[in-house]
Figure (cartoon, rainbow, N blue to C red):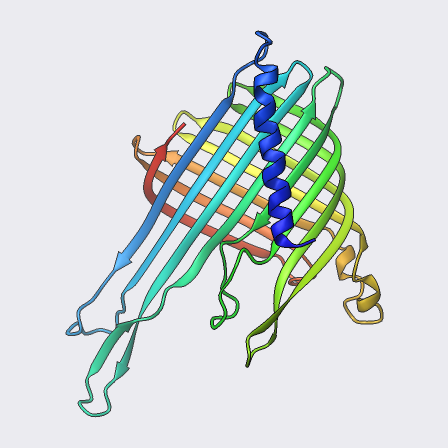
Length: 309
């Protein structure tokens, strides 16, 4: 399955869901859409003239984020929720060099380097019959805007991960917009990569990895204070089969794919004013096929935020 086909499937599912809304709207007991869309931009900048002494160098860093959510009880027995997260940021660094003729220091700016890049779109449908647990179906698409792993070859939306899952879910807590929902089920994943096979000619080839196993996802949205919001997501995945299992058999890393993958995201957002916010983001990743150790990412920024919905 090509990446284009995957995107067409996702867009088709979204169109079907949107088209089905008027069919359910005739029921006056159905609650309207719960929507939120927050866009924020943070940045830091320092600069020094060529005459500045002391060895300091300038830097510029910016990050933009978009977090959106739409949820509706489409019918008395079916709930639909869609979440979209987009992030992108760059860092510009100033460098210095000594002119061999004049023996003076010259400063220049390097090309921007990517610091943050994320596309995460998840759609979950739950059967709400009032049972102890709710059966669910979910589709999640994850990627990045630009693959900067090889500077000479720009590759967009690479890699792409598509996850389809089904199982049971339970809302552990709900009050106003605050809620904690946990779900557990079986997931099937496809990872589409555009791989460079020749650095001289920059020739690439498409590669597809598939696996399946158990997935646990817990989403948390809590108001810790009237001006402090916490958003968390913990995803655990245990693969039971892997399409490249025979290719890695007999190698030191033949069992790496069997390890549990962990993705734990935490966002603390404190509103200073209606337009200024402080964001603290912490992410812990563990994927033994990528790195034997856990990976930790932290960002702290003060910037402008606009709540569109």
